[in-house]
Image (cartoon, rainbow over all chains, first blue to last red; front, side, top):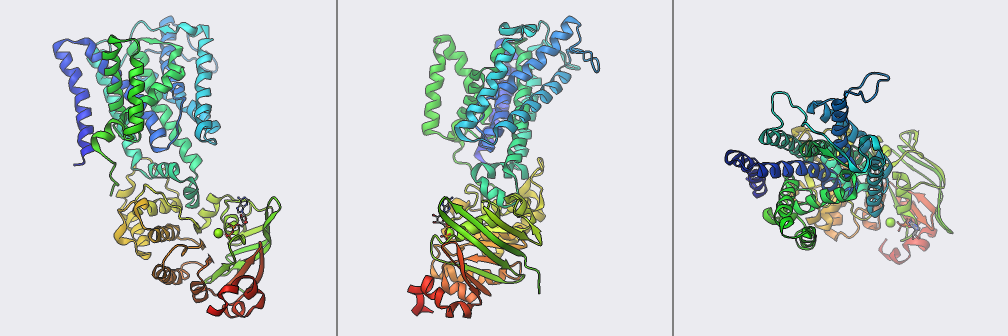
Length: 327
Length: 252
Ligand SMILES: Nc1ncnc2c1ncn2[C@@H]1O[C@H](COP(=O)(O)OP(=O)(O)O)[C@@H](O)[C@H]1O
Ligand SMILES: [Mg+2]
């Protein structure tokens, strides 16, 4: 077996074993931390598809994260107040069902990614970064100035949403849901990476002109990847809102976009489990250093610098070594 | 008379005051190798780029397989069967030889939106890609990344990628550039076999290769075709000898 495969399996097993152990010993807080890792990792799995495979440095993935979050917030808010979201052309009620919320989160973030992608993917380099950032900020200001959904203060959702057959208020059960979705996200991105689509996407990153001369349109490939990427991050946003039982406009802020990107870079760009390693490291640092100093993010910054300068493959890259050519 | 596969009519392109293509007329007939020669800066690559669709002409028409493709983009022309190699090798550096050829293959087949199929597990696809790599002599280098190939091998990989498209015409821009004598001879043999697949518009500086391969030669000078004809006609043409073959004259 490849070394990276072993590391990945270890990460997957560890992320499952630790909260299960914490469940046995009754350390609720550890379970919550692990849930946070799983959700942030899922958000980063989304970005990694665009950034890692496609080379699309999106500084606006907070838009999808936030839309996923507000999909949950708005649906649950209307369910809480028994007030339909709209009544024309059909009655659209709020809901407390996670499955419905996820579907709405996926559709909303996918549509937003399609629109933003169509408008930004013609640019590249710094222009692309700035354009995606600008769209993220637009959503931020939109929700800050929308009083119905809490404006600047956001909205608290008092009761966690439901999942058929599970008690979502039980931390370990919520963790299992998030973990399962993370695994699903990883599975999708693993399959995509080795699919014809993934091959074209990775080729477009390296040499778009060459891709055109074999009859493939880089723009369309990138757009499709961008949409899938945004949807995965959007789903993570819905989960994060449910974990916190709160949505606020900071989900849309550029800090969030930066944080998701930091996870990917720390863990290892284009590495399947890079997002998981990155999210685990980030949450651990946040937990340990956050208690020691308010400036813990400065440590993360320094670490990021080290990774960028000395370990381009991130955590996974340093542990597993250079990526081997498959086949 | 047979229909030309590729037909260029009165093509013009200027970069500011520099006229890189002047009223160029050119045809590529089925089964032939049509060589395009001319000194550096004559406008050969510029012409290739316009035919491939990377650069729009200022005026004129490009017809491919009987259809006006002047307004069609690179992707559209590639889909119609225009297989191209670049003057400066252009491959996917981090991909292996096999992945590069498979990419070309899936481009030709339009399967690039398959999300869940493992591309290198597709037996038929990889077998076809292996065969294309084998045709250019890269069968024992399939798992090597393109960036680790020698210069000559990268040139061959480009040809294999063009081959995988099952093209209706090849556009090859100096495929022997930077190759040693042995590599050039090998490439010459390869191109000689390739012409049975599809006609070749060949830009090349290596005169041995051009004279042994070409059915027709066109000479480009300052953006203009100054002569066009068989190998014998071009060798004998006094204008050509002066403009281009000057230094080479005794070698001919
Ligand atoms: N994109 C461009 N912009 C401006 N000038 C160009 C461009 N491409 C080529 N040229 C000029 O056009 C002329 C023809 O170039 P090129 O077609 O590359 O010549 P060749 O391939 O025959 O050596 C040269 O003088 C070159 O400097
Ligand atoms: Mg040239």
